Length: 409
Image 1: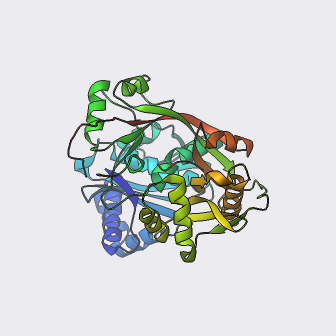
Image 2: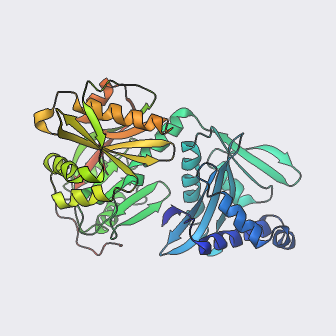
Image 3: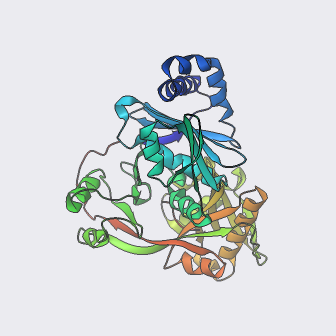
């Protein structure tokens, strides 16, 4: 299963969501009343209103290209609101609504909502159970309707944004497939390196060894497995080491973009089309890989903004920033060995913080290795959101037909 925003250019998707909004009204209120309350044209216009990125978002749950459900969220003066949530009857009780709720909450938190809410009928038991299981409580009653709300702390917002940032920034190929569930995010790219084959987060269910076998069988190439402090089972790392995985420590870190850092006279410039070859050489020398692959990524950067650090006019460092709702994810920083300890890394951080602040993005997050970037970020004022461990392996993964992070400030 995979969650994505509704395509604003797709009249078919807009019409489908409108039809299911009517089905929601019929189910929650009354079949006749729900069918006559609004015209389909009005409901389609209502869907379009939520496609204004400053107001709302519509998320779709898909499996095998089929849309199983949707949720609509929007910002209101008092709170972030879940307007409607619908899951096809045959797909219910399979975690679809919970996954849609995850994505809706993430977007509302990213947009600054400090209270989350939804309205429903007092007899809508399945939805009441779903929200109450996530900490929502009934705070308002009016006739047959209730409103459920829950507060959002700054620490929860920061953790949610930092946890999902790498998954949103993945450099997916046309062969990539996302496997997503409640508390689960996996990227599978046949023939790709570990950076595009990764289990970003997820608890194992049932027998641990059988569950590990099942995960490894979905990859035909070595892959990364990230383990956060809350990942279950608690001895997962030990089990993976026994299977040939090698682990290292990392941290999710964050800093407000309003913090001003001095660049120390190092010039930082954006990677324009004229600088692509120059930037590709820097990333090739620093990270390895094929220079043609670096050029292709830089020519088609998507939502990533790339920067170059210049020392006496020579490009000696580079980094990227992935723009996400409410946050900038700092990734892919590299400084060539001959230019290290001269302030280039700090300048790349400072320039990207300033650019995010100028764009109205309040927070920067990154994931950094304990052995390299994390101590440098400590000195620049970044705080640790959570530590975690990354394993890479197995050396000889099981051969199976696949079902089909970037890291560092």
